[in-house]
Length: 221
Picture 1 (cartoon, one colour):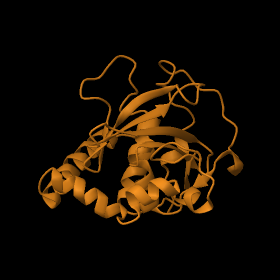
Picture 2: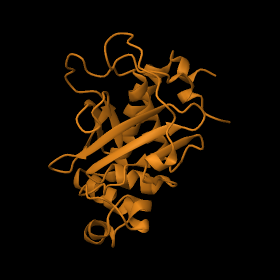
Picture 3: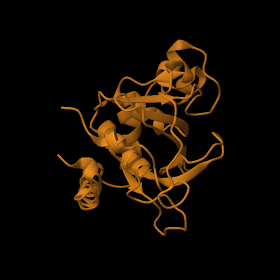
């Protein structure tokens, strides 16, 4: 059964002010993107790499959101921003952070004009990340990278590198002898007991999501 999440993502009213409807966007052609992810582990690895930009797109509605995912200096979390304006390099607004596998919506101390916690772009990323954590690639969703290494930001040209979103030098240096789960395990173990940390954070995340989405029509039915 298809997930109805993207059906109502026609616009995000928090981008340009209250209820400001965005200009209709033409449907992307595949040649606009340099690489599509086809498995959850590769997509997760890219998002956490350090300098990642992804676009998620509904196959049924054509609705899309672009996110920039930046690793913190101490590599303890990934900051996520959403493209909210015409400049593809500078028009990003803070969305939240990924820490201990959980995507935390918004800031600890909200600022004026922040993206709302119930904005479609916020819900879309949260939903997509939760699917990737379960090793699921939603069949009605495309996840693309922009053709640049998610670790260093250099242009990708080798087909194998385009497929994984990581250039050959960065792959040898950071990933060749470690898979995605082993890297994340080391980060979690450095913060304490791995299993208990995951259970605690997952319980908090599920409780928060259930409360926020209880009356959300995007999840109705």
